[in-house]
Length: 302
Image 1 (cartoon, rainbow, N blue to C red):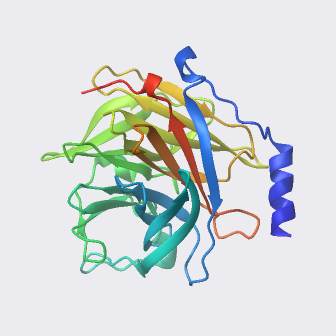
Image 2 (tube, rainbow, N blue to C red):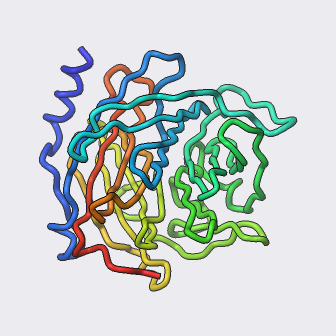
């Protein structure tokens, strides 16, 4: 039944991938592989974020019910062929913090080079820092906007640049702004660095900095019968609010892609690894999708 419904959703949409944006992007991003991931342990599903190590194999994945998964991507010919899970466990809460079940909505994940990582909780409108995978977190400072986010439309996209600075983008434009704020955390707290143009009904759900130093933003749009995906990138040294559209898919090409990790493989190509949230629904799919960017678009940005 699940397979038939999934096929039906795909058939209703534009199954063939459509790539748009600047002219040089049309032939530079290429679909690489798709792997449907299933596990039997309690709590698997709702995958909202992924961080892939520089080796392209080791990863952290986060569910939207605060389960962290450590594992390895199995590959053959560069394509993902399987997943090996090393361990999985519910994340700890900060000391003294209790959460009702409906507020355990962990969405964003961003990892530093030393292994420490940040998690955003969308309904709680907070960001927590974990010094290690299963240790106790610290609640980071807030921003006045964080209390103005619409219900279930807070921070889903987190990223860390090569200087270990944390960035965040909300799923929807706050009611006191006309565009999407790009927040950056520094010693004075969260500050708005730029505004990103919100367009075509797409909402930010994941982000990462690539090895090229550019900021990549994953967005999704739900049409009522399936999901569409858009991927944009931005040069924060020469900021353009519209960004460069690298990928725009038709309805049903992929499921609900929410997590993004950008890294460089052994051949020197930038890979975009994305993960889908099945919302714990039998008719949706937990899938890992990967694209590559050809060298022509991979110019140095410092």
